[in-house]
Length: 137
Image (cartoon, rainbow, N blue to C red):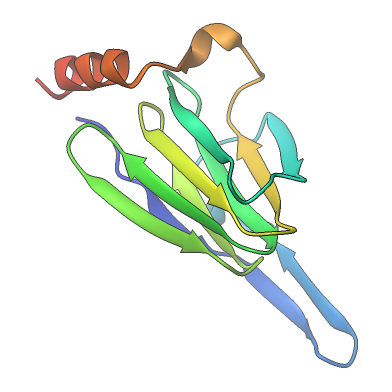
């Protein structure tokens, strides 16, 4: 059975007077060893990102600025999450289709469990559905 996406809350320290730091310092915040970090920026509001699933890669997505609406589908459950604070992250398990909508000026940070490998990506939703149904059996 496929894992279910869920929200994470990161540790935050600081104050309005000096600013804040949000951290993944404690292992319980990220359920995998981080191998890759990347960020997305300059995405026009009318562009939908994501539109894929990963066969093996797990991710945590954070909106450092702005907001990201994430629609997820693990083959059994569809959920919508709004990432609108840098202390909030979305755990995206392997075999979870995502569609992402960025607000104007959003910078999205992604922590990934694997190095990039194009063969890990499923970019056709119908193929994903067949694979997800097979895994759920």
